[in-house]
Amino acid sequence: MSYLFASRKTIVAGVLAMLFVLAMVQFKIFYSKAPSNLLSYGIIQDYTESRTAQVEDYPVLQPRQSSLEHLGHFSGSEETLTHMQMENIVRDLRNFLVSSFHSSLAETSNEKAAAVISKSREFLRVLEAKLNISKALSGLQRRVDAKLKALQNHVQRTIHALQHPSDCKKAPKLLCTLDNPWGFAAGMHDVLWCFVAALRMGRTVILDSSKWHHAPGDDWSKMFAPVTGETCVNVSLADAVTGYPGYDSAPKERAKILEMPSAIAGTLLSNHGTPYAWWYGQIMAYVLRLQDSTQEKIDEFKRVHGFEHPIVAVHIRQTDKKKEAAYHGTEQYMSHVEEFYLKLSLTRPVTKRRVFVATDEPEVIAELKARFPKYTFIYDKGSVEEAHDPRARTLSSALFGIVRDVYLLAESDFLVCTFSSGFCRIAFELMQTLHTDATPHAVSVDVDYFYGYVPFPPRRALFRNRAHLPDELSFDVGQLIEKPEALSALKEAKHKDFCDGYQRGRIVGSTEAGEYPTYKTAQTYNVVKYAAFNDTEAYG
Image (cartoon, rainbow, N blue to C red; front, side, top):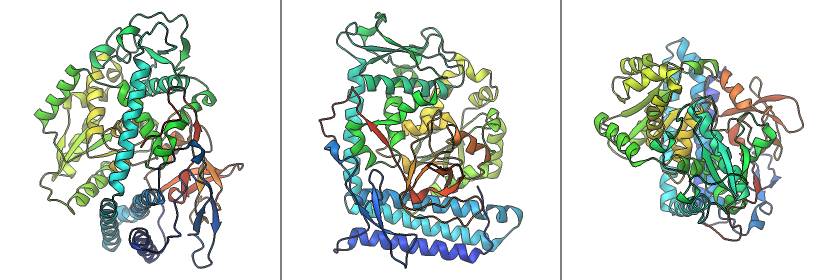
């Protein structure tokens, strides 16, 4: 969705007002000795509203009892949640401004509009830097990092223990048959579903990838480490649960992948910006552990091609992707690349602007080099040409290039891609194991992060919204907003020209859908007990 307001002065005034509000909120939280009435923004809490006539759209929030306090290890703070909300607002405001002005800038050489955008982004850039400084000075970043690192260690130990039973013959098992005929990401997200189901049941996953087109026979073990221990080799599957993943399984069954483990929910949901990506990333990182020989080949590529930090990675898919999502020009990706390096230059000298490019379109490389000469682009010409042929990219010979690209995307300091691409989502998931929270280290130029088969649970409105733009959704505080249908994110990607801080939804119980500002809402979560986890132990 892209809108151009009649009055640019209104936008500028709104931007400055928002910056002032954010700055005052930051000051009040970290430096005021008086008790703050700006309480946590409801990632996992319910709220009542206490309005004032002066700030109708920004009510003071008062918390009720946390819906997860009964778990016994709620581990968050209003400081953490408020910081995450402010970071999201800054990001969405930047995207909203750029998308709103884009039509004007593209059609005319409007120097004033361009200057307004540039200066507004400078304001936001400095504000982000100040937010990061305040997190460091208050000790918040250190505390959050410690909690999430401890949680990651616990989850990895739990997965490893489940997959390495002392006697696999006696262990309950789940057979996961990887035979998805589509791309790499589709297959891996099927395996993800197998692992989530197995963790819920407390069963060891036995992976059969022999019929997968990317790794037929025993080729999986040539690229990746085994997912099970030695006692599970050639084990009998007579008593194993079968039928997984069932890549055509009904949305109601697959929706169980969205239910969070109660043992980790308290710490995770109150300390991470994209909890689903973190949770899936822990599983994905375990499944995609590399053989030493694979890692050595990736390291050699990095050495030969100069893959060094700092570096931004972009994933630009344009061949068959044109049928699945709206077209996004290279300038959209590079706008975010430029933003990363401008922010970096606030804190350190930037001598070389490296960009790793993973694409299926050779012309993209030529265009990037011609239009953005001050950047150093790193890519594999052979892999780009192979990926350009949809048939060739599904062959087993293409697997190394695919794996190398997804790992280098994840290893970058900042990732720019489309979350409508499952490949990009895997890279973002893997990033979560390299950063305590990789949310600020990636941006999608189309839709927000999602799981392909089923929509996330509804989002709860934290602030009132009244429609001022075409097709905008109005709602009141406390209302739940859901995706209109199961594959909404994929359908939205076909019509979304820019990431603009908005997404499509409808109020639960209504049939009327519209666009709404994400920052006025918070994700809700379904939490259940997983047999593989010990709910009585506290983590983080």
